[in-house]
Image (cartoon, rainbow, N blue to C red; front, side, top):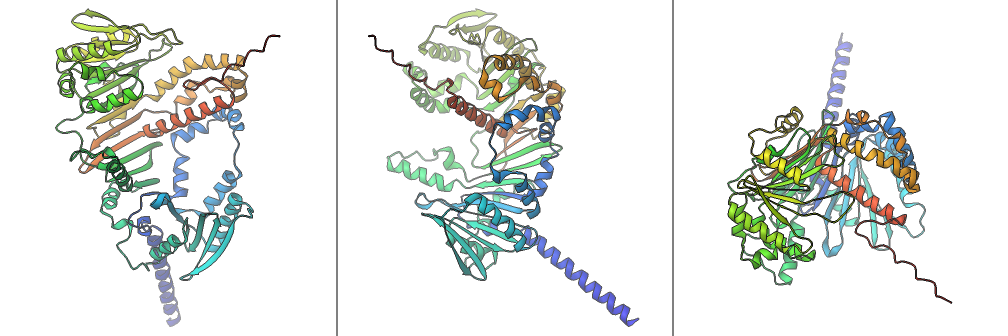
Length: 586
């Protein structure tokens, strides 16, 4: 009996020791990365759990779209033309999965003397030896057997720091199980190890002690898969020094937007297959005693695929707009000053809520775009519009009046898409568009009391996914947009592939997936921004977010322009190569 009792006690002690070790390991592995970084850290990006992020990514809508057999079949040819580095193959993903990185981070700690210093690391699973086998393999793939590299090992507080140098550049690595660290400076590695081992003499020199960071981290959701923090103070100080050097001292309370920001944080998470981004800008409120009404929604129809509403006080930015116009080679806003129209006149004439819509009917080849501004003083608004149109150098505008609405329009030069810019000015709203018909129809809808867009169930469901906005809102019906693009561009791609070898060599339009294959994985993209307490919170949700869409369009445009230049094709905005000189006549 005593032996059984002793065995039970031993088992209980062992179980408690295992539980305690597991709890301690979990607390250590989830320790805030900010505790490893100096207080003056400028930027840090973090992935809390790589394997969890990968698993959630593989269940999201956009990945399911990518895995569609028809999509894979279509992408096989264009992806086959893209060289894939060995370091980013399937084996690397398996190695990362084996390491199971947690709290992976990279941080910019300083840029003194224009010399940026970075630190990074991650918490790995398993033993140091297992992790080292994988990391050494990565290092050899990235650096090769370069004879110019100099390696040295230094012992520090029970850790081995390996420094690899080439010229003035250094990469230092070290293990502090279960952590692996890398820095661009050996001294920074020692400081990092001191903070990780809680040996640092200055316990306040940590990012998690910074008030701006603590305020920003309170906005971070608990289930994010990626997070970043940016402290603009270093950049704003440099900007202030530059302005002082050129003798440009702003009036009190008038600094740039960057100088007003205390911090910027962003996070990303997955929700029911959708991606949800949250961006926080810690700064004073810019708009006073006003909020977004989304009144321009009355211009929308059931065929509206894009809607945007934002607070934009153009009257307060007259000088900036004039400088930008002058830089672009036009003095259109200078005409307002020459005519005696001030920023106060603009504020009296127009409201500050800018609206923009894009409608695309099923029978049209291209969408119709609209921009609107509320009118608060019709007389001053008409005076401003007429001055701006007279100041335009190319072409003349014709003015007509119909049902108390003043219309201004002109015929643009012949182009691939016929455009007749039109502006309508009533006593309630200014609407600008690319053709008279869409503008006149928008004026009629503006006089109504209902909106087809606002009554749409698709719009309602998307808008309710995010909190109500106070200064910015955007909505994109991706299903309708893709369906219209497919109907318009598919015939053009087929024709281009038949007559342009470069297109045929890049894609096979005959394998373009059917629209319903794509649209079944799509949902609206919605973005909302509001002021909450001490800063602006901008949220976006959809199969991809509005920020990701903008970044993707910019990258795609850049790659497209580069590819066109490489193939010797003409790109808008780039000069054509000079024509060959004529052969001399004998």
